[in-house]
Each structure stands twice: as structure tokens, then as C-alpha cells.
Length: 87
Image (cartoon, rainbow, N blue to C red):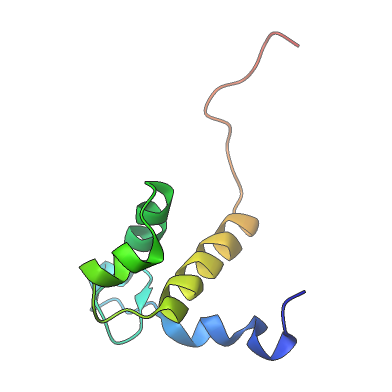
């Protein structure tokens, strides 16, 4: 079970600034988009590989990006791309 004192700490690490990457969510103090971190994890990169590629990031930044991505999916409305008509 997550520690409640750290539950929202990730929010302090993410910024949405129209002047940085057109307002795309980025790790605060960097120009590294959350989407790049989530995509790298999805492609099989380890947090260590991401930190090697982006030395300004910490393990906590990567966890924050993944928490942000999970929160975004939980709060998104999805439109099906294809309907399953076999049912």
C-alpha cells in the first residue's frame, strides 16, 4: 500500500508550461516529456537506461512520470477505435 505522504508527491515533479514543449507534461526543471519516459518504459528500457540517456532525471522523476501517465489514463474518456461486432 502506498504511503499517503508520498501519494501526491509526484505531482510536484511534473509541470505543464505552454512555453516548454507546447505545454506537454514534462519533468519539472527539464524539457523531458512524460510521454518520452512512459514510451521508453513501454519499449523495454529500464529506469537506469533512461537515466543514462537523460542524466538530469532521477528514479523519483521516472516514478512520477509513470504515476502521471497512470492518473491521466484513469481520468480519460476513451472512444473505441474499432467496435467488436462479433458479440
